[in-house]
Length: 484
Image (cartoon, rainbow, N blue to C red):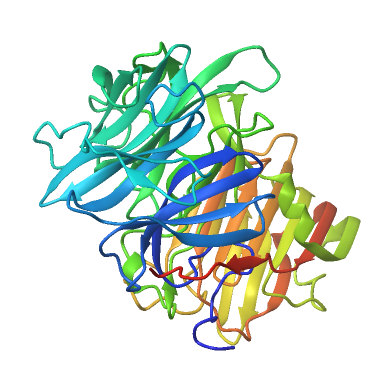
């Protein structure tokens, strides 16, 4: 395997080359899911930001398109969103695709517009940019815009606050409220907000969800994503939880700046995040490219004993990559045995359900096992905690904060533990108990580390079922002139 393809994911989105971070401008229009992203086409470390662009019909296989937005006299092109202006409120043309993004120059951040009348192939910057000036705040960025009843709404990150603005034409904006005031985690600067409404499962209730990237202070170290549950009146958001409640969307180290698709044709709320961490993003051991996105997740709300919580589940479309299938059912797991001794793989999916009693100490999987290497996914019954241990996952000496153990509280209902795991060349995503807890971590093992183990410690456990699918690579088509 060439150095360029070493660790390159097989079914997680990566740039054709060079640097990528936040997803931007996610929108569906006329059969295509559009994915834009923060892109530096000339280096593998963060630098002058452009918007890269790709499209997909099925959210699995992607076509890379030429760069959509490039830096100009107003500065670099930071994160933002895209809407379809169905009613031509801005006057750019019926069903124009309108990008609302942050211009960054000389320490100032202002909001600007660009539009496309050919389904995102070519773009024109609005002649009156910027359309919203910074109020002397060095952090004033990442606009997420959507239509609410009879006006546009913008949520914007500013320090440890989310500011809200409203408009009838996408050009002229007036402030309508704010949210923050020491709510949630404020250890790092807030970024990349997203705001949407979801129905609470098995009820007629709805709540609004505000997701926020936090630049530092996540339990796994460095950057992470928190969320708030509450209400939105068309002008501003209010949380239904106390100020000191911190709700993390993902307990791994590598889930940041997530955004959801606008105008998803099936009414789903689909979200994707940058699978990286600002602690070490510029030094991860890849060659010729840096940065990957998570699997795409469908979001739901579920009422729990602790309150309403956000749950993530992998989209059904990923099942199209399933190839060879291995199945076990109703088996007794005994300490010291490994039912997976004859299996090997570096790209696969695991779906499992176990019955665990208080006599079981630890239950889980070793994946990407090789000479001195393994990544451990385990559940401690006594502690009621789920762990992902990457201290021996392979290369980790590029940053002191990388080789760590990440954990989350997880209660089992009726002694049942369900784990849905996705393993790719450089990542592991664990969805526990139907997505109530998620842990996403990058790993960088040797290509020879391909063994798998299933283990139990303490007493026996019952494996209700276990399915392992070998996954085929997704397809990525590269259009010419990507680096222009």
